[in-house]
Length: 438
Figure (cartoon, rainbow, N blue to C red):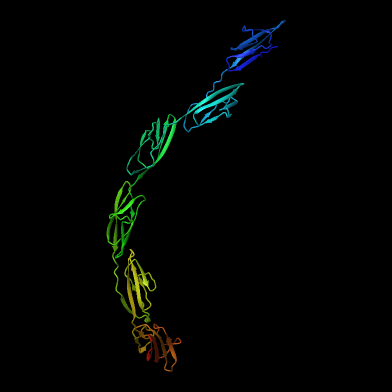
């Protein structure tokens, strides 16, 4: 018995062998062949008649060839160096092997080369490959970081031949001009592949001198000038001295220079003297504090003051003791001078003027009896009548007797007064009489 099958298929072959089996019999194919096996090369119906001694049988089949698959890789093109290409034969294929080991549909490719692919499709094995080539653009390299002098122009060339240029300042030419400092970058296209590079550009400016134009000191004292210079600058005085802090004893302008790789500037600083404050000679003052004398010591006009003793800082002070007083006067520049004052004691005896009568009648004239003093001193003032009874008593030099005793006017008569004076190491008692006239 034979069976060729109703349909027969093969995978991408030029011919296919059909077998009628049943060895020992006679065969007759519709192709004219009389062998048990024949090679079929076309798609069509094939029939065979097999003869036995008593009968024959007929069988037939249709032979078809599977079409050769064509795999197109959309990414099978030139890539840019540094890019990543994705290879995918298509999602209709259920089973694939990249490089005969990787079964992922999408293969990531980083390098140029041949990537084999085996596909299992409709019972057939298809071997193919993807060819990948990464293009290497030209080597783009800008100059290193550059420092120029202020006012200069920097010309920068890409030094490679590219199809397009994109500079950070907007230029699209191979060479560009730079006027300002900062980051400069270039992006160049090499037939769709890009490279970029950056550099820093700095401009050196003229040195800026930060210093006091004039320095003043007190007369006779040296003046110190300090020059502050920016980093990277070389400092030098006119005589070659390179110390930025320098002390001068002479007055006048002192020239120095400041330089960097691009510029040299000169300037000068002045050392001068303040006018010395006029100092008074020691002044002697005679006073008598015992009679409550009050006076002030005054210093000449200055910016600040310091008195000794006492550490007072005002221009005027009120001394209360005999002895030496000094004041140090300072001006706005810090220069100072000292003035001295010597206060000595000079007191004179008390002088009392005592009237011999008064008239307490309320007419506003001579209504009170009291002594008058040339100087104020400590004292006690008492009034007695002729029988020795105390009519009035006070220690106030400004208070007098109004001719009353216990708020009642006393009669006209002669009354006795006693005045006791003390001070300056002495004690005196003055006695006398006064006429009370109404």
